[in-house]
Image 1 (cartoon, rainbow, N blue to C red):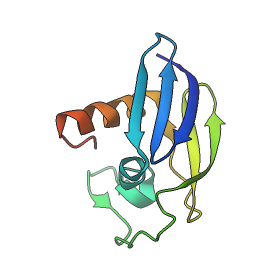
Image 2: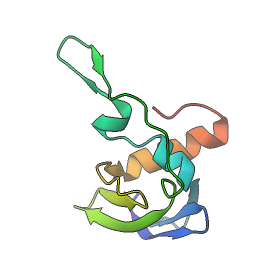
Image 3: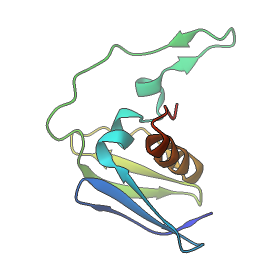
Image 4: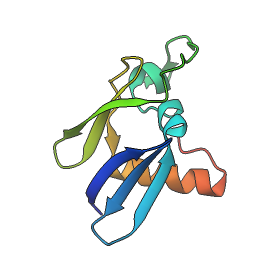
Length: 107
């Protein structure tokens, strides 16, 4: 599925898909599960995970300042605190939304 509209509404990201369904994901959830290497870490060829030290989120960390499309497969939000390295693919957004509904971790 591909989105036909994406926009932050209140404290959620609203995505309308080309099949007519809609997905709503809390902005805080999107930020906490940011898929970038700085947030989620990065594995080397031996499977070791390297991750930056945890940093506290500031008051603007869960606000989206801008959303930039990346090709035909993802968005790259700029968060209110300036963080902007995560690429949120369509599949990843759907998995995070489904995991939050199920109470599971999207990882």
